Image (cartoon, rainbow, N blue to C red; front, top):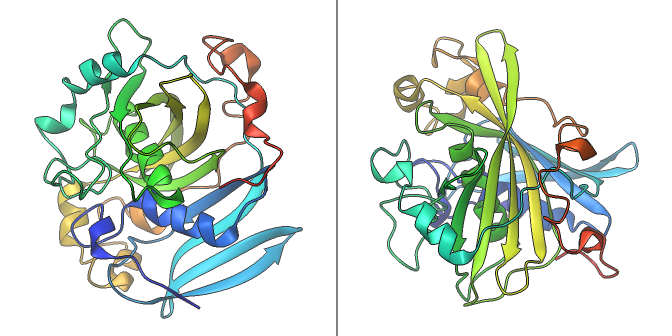
Length: 304
């Protein structure tokens, strides 16, 4: 079974957007109503090249392994449903638009070609999200989004991806996605107003010279405030110039050379699977009413 990342869905110019790629793996696993999917990116996913996919099972969970020849690219596994705790209350669509005016990527963007948040993308081509800090908030970011007719599970994962990086400080510290765990309850309505909320979940610690940061994101319908999807992610701080010059995009083996990137773990070891308890502390909820329908994360039907 093959797996191809079309160049339209890039993050950096020559590799896939982490959220879109992770969402595509999630779609292949087809999670049930009480399941999330966790994806670990091992190397920058190459574009327009057929990758190999192997399905499996581990401890009763469905798994996927994606490789580019002999080089591992990504791993995915199903897991328990995410708890709707620790999620800040959504702001209005108008407030998200206002926050977007302060989007730090407008001044300096490490990956302006990014499908999710790139400033070089044309309308209708990329999502063109503009996550900005919410005025008067506690570090939350918000992005306004009106999904186009081609919205899919993959684009929802992409929408949940980059806002978390900006909330974690990517503007002053370039980062790439390491792991992402998400659950999509329902696809957003085409042409309707939605808001993506993002917030930092703390410093994920340091392993050797690799520094990690944790984020949370959630997608809400502006019409009724319903929680449609949520995610938790681990971000890996990188040396941007070394990352671009390492050959990682063109030669998957390059990122296995500790000298290729000054932070050798930044691409080679994108972080451990999330800590399930990281955002499940009920005391961490900033607004108990933030999720207006807590049962939404466990719908009677299948997750789309």
